[in-house]
Length: 391
Image (cartoon, helix red, strand yellow):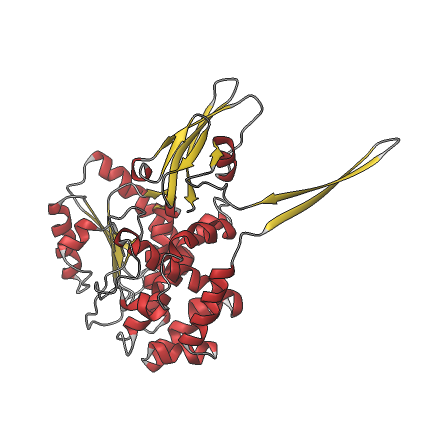
């Protein structure tokens, strides 16, 4: 998987099959091969990446692979390409490694590569740990699928491979309470609904650049990953997570046909599921949470009901949202007397602008603003918050 250069950065996987034997499983942690030419900054990033990979490998119980971490230079990418070639694990060209951030092999489970850079993409809730879990699950797919060849119709089911890897990648965000599931759905839905293409078309778009999917090519990759993630997530809600994350890959490995394995595992065709998923995605709205509190005194009893919506504040070309509302949506605490300021991210300056204590849309898209909350004591907290701008 590699991060493509788009307005909203997303993840792409490029893996190829090499006929080699099943890897041996290590006892403690993966084998790490680190570029000897890392700078001090690279080394800091590499340490964070190694820690995240080890944690993910431990969680999935699969450590029999080599992780290559390389400098973010042309020489580093070439070095990494040669290293994975030495263990018969092709993950694309040196050029693809230089342009990407991470890649893993979902077929043989032998290796993954990471460029030694800081990984933080709040607009798609990505950090080093989430990318490591995504790549680690690609290797788990290989392990659960019996490490057999791609088999029939793999290109028609890439949504399943990338979508489940995204489910795995976002799980730490939920576990660590950085995001709720509903917040992730709302965030991913912004890009997912940019295309009405079928899941098969989305899958084929990974290998066929002529499949446009979206009217604005800048959002193509994001739409692919967002739609695949939501399709895999929704499948866990109408089936079981074990079937989605484990049984399907075992069946695909057993029969060698990825499309047929879907029907056998879930009792419906991909087209039948696609129709259910599309209906759910189009109808989905963020739920509201109702809490009731009761206060009793010596003379009166007062009951109040508070409805706390999880929807993002409405931002459009005609309607502005307060910076405080955006901060609260971003799970920031705004105490009484605090001041809230914001700066629009460079990637979103064509999407929105800050006007006084509000943010207003310029055109439809995702507005990313760095919100700073300063308390009366002078303490500051800054966080980047992504808010959809509607038409």
